[in-house]
Length: 394
Ligand SMILES: *Cc1c(COP(=O)(O)O)cnc(C)c1O
Image (cartoon, rainbow, N blue to C red; front, side, top):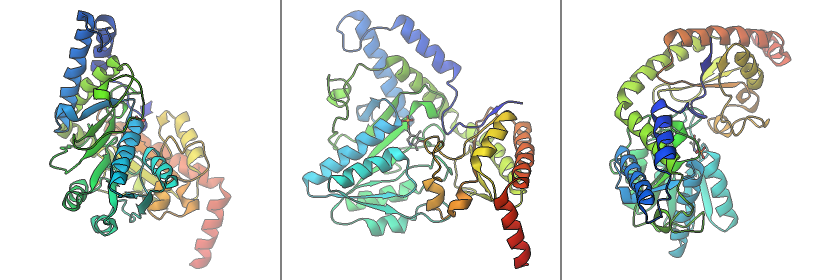
């Protein structure tokens, strides 16, 4: 059996998106800034994609900026809101300890420039407390940036409530919605969102393309300087094939969102139930308020990396956390933030599935994981020491 279970890292590009992209490359190859007919055809395709994308999140097309992906959108949103705040002497930013590095590293950079950043703790269930956000906001707060759903443990944050508080206090609210868009229903107005980032390759579109949604009253700062593309806010000839591919994938995802989620939840819960039967295992993140396709477990006494390699050999492709942290020996900052001890956080496994997976595949994953965990514990001195201690404690 072969099962790709790393959809949070990236998804397989859909047939429909590929077809649309090839069609653009073959037939609509003009530069959208050119005045001739071929250029204007490209411009038309670009603006149609903008309308389609806007519709999926309840935005106005004038508030949609195409970027090179989620990271660029996060950078631009946060830097823009910070600079806007600084003009009015507001140099404080509120965020959380479980954000993606695209957010955390940008905040780090701003801190070095004299901004003050409050990173909120997150309780064990992986869901930020609305009350904590409320209490952290000050007179000089320029921005609150909190992710819609976590990329490692899948927890969905109380975005609407946080947005309402920001609105009431007159603070700009940005959300990194890279894991959420195309997977759960989002409406920027209902959710009180001022700025939102997402990325094409997390919902079966291509890599290297994303969106920044920003309300028109927020002046954007350019991250890429040059031509006047994207109403002067993001220079560079538009990646039209990718933009159109992303729009097609998003439209598909949004029109089937409930149905897809229902299927995924059934698969997810089967997987959670099965993996829970492994001794000394823990589900990371709230059981219900999590992305339909996200499962994240800790198995005590083993190394996540070894687990991944052995599962890979059995046809199961998963992750130990975020792709960015794998390869380094530091445990995931998200697992540490929700209170998992250092030595335990190393034994994590993230399985992110999609609606095309089957219940048989879930059962296969459970069976194989059980075997591999047992094998690894059998050769682990850490596990042996743990068991000895447990017996003594008894
Ligand atoms: C993948 C991801 C990003 C980065 O998006 P790219 O398009 O790869 O730059 C940012 N935030 C979250 C939550 C993500 O999952």
